[in-house]
Image (cartoon, rainbow, N blue to C red; front, side):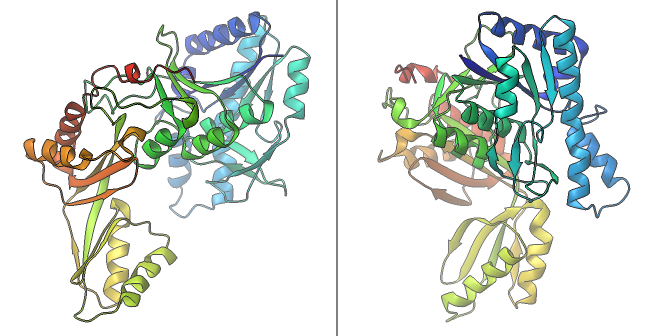
Length: 414
């Protein structure tokens, strides 16, 4: 039995017309004998009655201190509503279907409320329904602990649900339907020349997600890579085939036309903190300062340790707390103006000389000042003033010719 997992984002489910279109696609896929599992997100976006952000605001309107367990109980209802509506739409269209919560679908998670991880999936129930000719419509973004507590998987968690179910069911493919053509070379709202990427590796997608691109939940990428899930991200109703994501060894990544970069990512809301080090201060004290931030769950990035200064970045919302903690340790803290982190990503830059030089040339030519940098085998990130972020992205997109069809480099089928 050929199995396809199809995941639908909340924007596609926001209207009855949209839900009928989703049902039609599921029925058409099932028509050729394929068994389909549908995974759904909460309906709509912020402002819509049942969207996740709306539910969060509903709880926070009562008070800012919200018990994580109670919040998960509320947030899980968004996907349950979608699940019931889509299942009923399918049945009314003559397609047998059954609505299942994450718990009913056997998704067992850790007890980290609001950000749980999937431990295992008992797919027995879903498989039984498929064998009886039904479409299991499963609530994404949620699961249940071994002790019976309802949990949610964090932002983008429905993607994780779909990929994990694909792995558990041995699906031939997992299709994630969004309101964009696929994974783009950059955010098209900031870089109008951005275009869809035809094929990309899980490693590249993981880097994009970690560096700010809202393409796929990092845990979804990790599960897909580990279990070799064939994953496609596509636009509903588009003739474009979308973006195929596969493991690196299945996909040739040659350097063609001097283009080692696949895509750009950005994080818009960061600040740089500079901490003056005392003369002769040993490394252990500086490490201790960073450890204090870690104890308070403040994530830091772009760390540069020099004899006179320790520089790093934190997210905008953590600036005040981080500065107060460091001041209590006796440090003088200098806080930058609003910054952004812009990054280039591409497996093709591994071992490739001159990529950083091209980054510096492009940004300098655009009048963008580089405040700090970091790099790995497959990424280069630069800290810039937030006011210069869009200019920086446009310059890098142009320098690495990303407006030209990226997929032309990648002819090997995954």
